[in-house]
Amino acid sequence: MIPDDVVDEVRARADIVDIIGEHVALKRAGKDFKARCPFHEERTPSFYVVPSKGFYKCFGCNESGDVFTFLMKRLGLSFVDAVKAVAVRVGVEVRDVSRQGGEDPHRHLHEANSFAQEFFKKALWDRNAGRPARAYLKKRGIGRDAVERFDLGFAPDEWRSLREGAAVHGIEDPVLLEVGLLVQREIGKEPYDRFRNRIIFPIQSASGRTLAFGGRILGQSGKGAPKYLNSPETPVYHKGEVLYGLSWGKNAIRREEGGLVVEGYMDAVSLAAGGIENVVAPLGTSMTEDQAKLLARYCTKVFLLFDSDAAGLKATFRAGDVLLAAGLHPS
Ligand SMILES: [Zn+2]
Image 1 (tube, protein in one colour):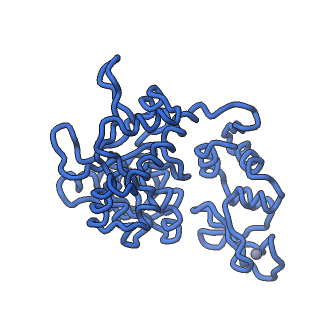
Image 2 (cartoon, rainbow, N blue to C red):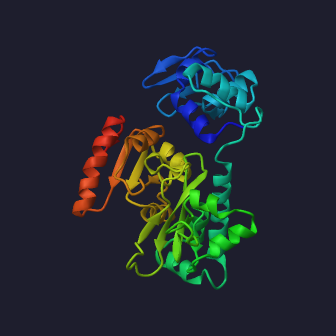
Image 3 (cartoon, protein in one colour):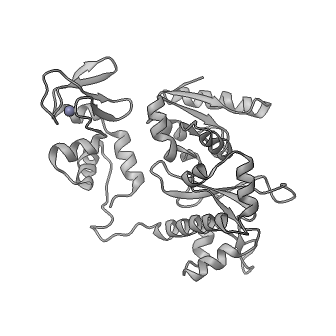
């Protein structure tokens, strides 16, 4: 297999018009391109390539997909070979992890994150321990559908429950520390769970891999217990490069041809629970250049819904500049 982020990068860099144009006689149609469909017999063109979104679609036979799907269907390539074929053209080095025997160097970190996500989910649905957390979500209008879609969980109000659960599964302290799930105040001191008594929001890459967690405190925030707490930067999580909600909302963002940018994961999940699905949130930052570029893969229009207090307005202006620089149209 090829790591998800490499696949995403190859797709983002590929010129889909150029590549499909080698197999099909494309004609310009406004911002898009059309041709007679290579997948079914037709006299008048109903096959469209939409470069701004990186996909093709035939309105005659409903074939659709991205640059990889096209090569797989047209040339009979496997997914891995299709990615490699495009990667060569765009100058991205692809290492096929499974075939060359090399391992994903971060596999242990991803395993720890997967374990933690399941652990938090189980705690949320635990009959007794999860009851206050479920009641809170219900009060905020976040129903079971949204809870499941966003893989929400609950970190119990205990110092070492995750650590002990992980140990049973052979996941050791150094790994949990590296991925930010444990905190150790000083060398030699016993590590403890970073997330305690919090609703947990897994933070995923655009392709849906959990990289980190955000937690909202249940009840009152207080001394040393901020309302929101996120995983620190780790080898697999760089907060300025991830947009919360994109893995769940990207199809809606494409469909609606625009994305809503809100401040935090709580806002994003609340809106999605209310049926507004094309939502993302930067994580503790206004909006970075990388985040804007990520969003620009899926749409050209962006609506900023930050708080109307002074800090929110400042963040709105800063985000506006970054979005414009990435070729997006904020409003
Ligand atoms: Zn067709």
